[in-house]
Length: 106
Image (cartoon, rainbow, N blue to C red):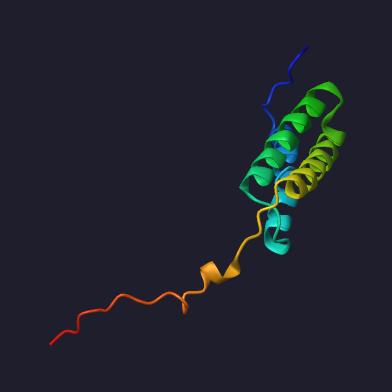
């Protein structure tokens, strides 16, 4: 196994591609789907990053991001359905929580 040198900026960008690609679906699902929780998001990003880096070194830079995003999507869907965690948006509603009284300057 011969690891490539990371001297060029383009090589650094190619290497960061799988890391960025693995975060796409956890972010999108976290914004638009109520079921996924933190466990699903973290596992999807870790699995996508690791398999993407393995694909980068074993196959090539041109497929590493595709492998990473695909694995991240599959892991995100599987763990979101297996461990559902419905987020309650009412917890973010500041109007529902009473504010602490403030002292008025006299």
